[in-house]
Image (cartoon, rainbow, N blue to C red; front, side, top):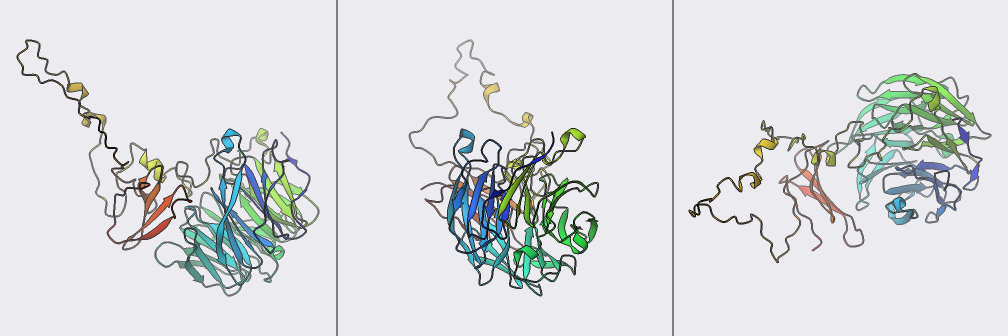
Length: 476
């Protein structure tokens, strides 16, 4: 099927325009110089419907990040806002619901870029300051201030497992921060790896992005190329170039990390095969392009230009020519509890909970149980109920009394254990009220309590020096 690019849809006034897909791929969010956020349906049958318009910003929207249930946006005044996204009714034909949930940060300088952690509990903000700010989405407290850049920071991106944070400055320096522990630390500095640009104009700045499998950071650099920095070695593994004739302004990875899309000031959209290290598709429009994003669950791109227009590129990868699709065959929203882990593995918190082969505790100091725990070791009592039969009425077989009896008193729901440790995190309780999770630190745990109904209860977190392994959660 040949690819098609829709005519420009002028979503905003002329100027820098941000774009991002929802994690389920069913909507596209844009932000523009008219201080508006707009949310569009992405499917072909719904995309012509009227967009949802959010008017909470009072200045140009410069940055945009979308996670499973949140939209976080930043503007020229340095105000970062959060919106809750509800898609639960979409399966029943309901409308998408987007509601403002509050102000995350008020900076004195423009918010150039935003990245949400995989747990949706933290957000990193890059401003025209020399420092990065990491804010809690639970209570909007400033968790960390990362100091190290010598100039304005224009890009920030969490690794899929939220272990590392990559940032780029206007002087071309790329820094990688280890976010584990009480205080994040800088583990790598790459000088002049990115573009050297003047602060103050989003159109003249570029953004670096982690790949969904966590292996590479794609950094637009000098010579109109894209440098792929390898995780662990923190060295430039390869470069993609030879197509763009002007600065590469933005890059986006496909959800399976097989493809990379880039847009530039030359008006070109280029799709790269990362394994082959070569471009496979190019599309050109008039004018400079701002941002691009992949549909996480489909063969679709969305990109924006400096005139405030959004384009949708359908059927991007020619599957009939033998190319692999840009998504998994059975896609699951990135970072979901029951889906693939953010780092490309299949281990997850809830996956371990329902995995019969999962260890009971893989955390620090856990003891290894050599017992297979097979079905032969389980006695439900039913097989022995009629082992002794009083067929001669001698009275030696007592009348069977049911093991469980009904009670008028209703007991609270109780979960008799925790999930295995996975990436330093496990659930202590999980029910219809909410969840209680433990996050391993150096000498203590952090307990994070999250409720499903935000109107009744407020999320909270606190330090746990006793390292609790059990919790209960109820409405009363």
